[in-house]
Amino acid sequence: IKLLEHLPEKYRCIVFDRRECGQSGGRVERVTWAHYVAQGKGLLDHLNVRRAHLMGACMGCCPVAAFAVAHPASSISMVLYWPVGGAKYRIKAHQRFMDHLAFVREHGLPAVVSHAKKEGKAFSADARGGP
Image (cartoon, rainbow, N blue to C red; front, side):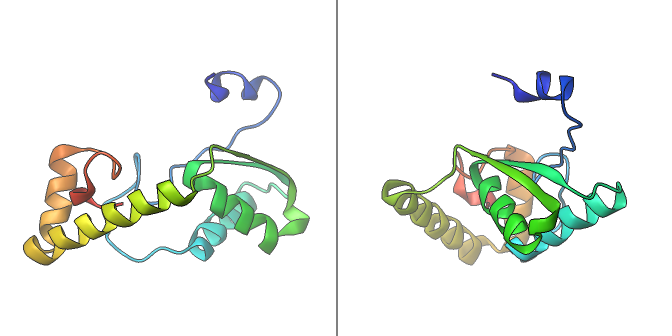
């Protein structure tokens, strides 16, 4: 089901890419859950949205939960679907990060950026381009 084809019938949907993914990007820097929370809160404040239903998918579940903890008065509810995790996922993710780090050590960060732009593959498909 394509949620954004249905949710706007009843709800105002504010959608944004995870920082450095999708149509945003271009920087290589450390980003924490606190950064995502601050950006989300800043966006809602800018749009004058005092309270919102929050939804996160995959890795988006973590910043949604962090937002609700940091701003309970702004959070009406949470929908967390397809959260990542579990032992098998963690083991595979650790291996992807090790593969990525090996590529960084051998070729440097500029090669990571170049590779990510050239190949355009997700981290799960090609660890060399980074998360």
